[in-house]
Every structure is written in structure tokens, then in C-alpha cells.
Image (cartoon, rainbow, N blue to C red; front, side):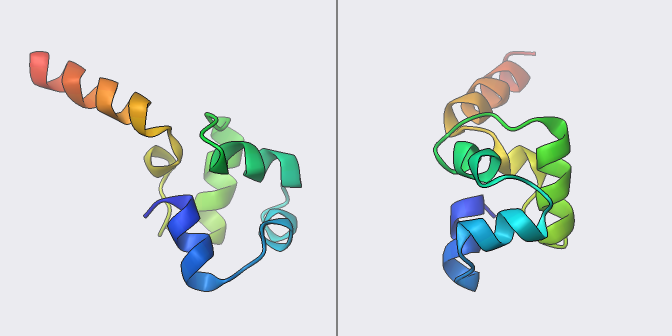
Amino acid sequence: MRLDEFIQETGIPVARMADRCNLTFHQLYHVLKGGTPTLKTAIMIREYTKGRVQPEDLLPLEELQKISEQKKSK
């Protein structure tokens, strides 16, 4: 599940989620706007969402497509 889908489904404000994940608003907003999260940020989000949002779900879609293409070419 993508992070924006989780936020929309739960209705939690970004600032509140960031606080509960022990992240800054900017860190969470950066991921929502397509930025690549740090490993720590990805793990904190995964823990808060009880695994519904996995670290790979936080990568920009373009990056996921590149990874998928690389796997296919091998």
C-alpha cells in the first residue's frame, strides 16, 4: 500500500502521523511528494503502519519501474 493511500484510508493528518512515527513533518511530506526516504524513515513508517506500508512502497514509482526492468533483463 502506498503511503498516500494509507493516509487517505485512515484520515490521519500528516503532522500527527509524523509525530507518532517520531519523524518530522518534512520527512513525511518529502516521501509523499515523491522523494526517496532514508532507511530509518522507511522503517519507522513500516512499524507505525504495522507493515501495511512496506519500504519498497515508499520509493518513487519511477524507481520501482527501473528495479522491475532490471530484474526482467537478468
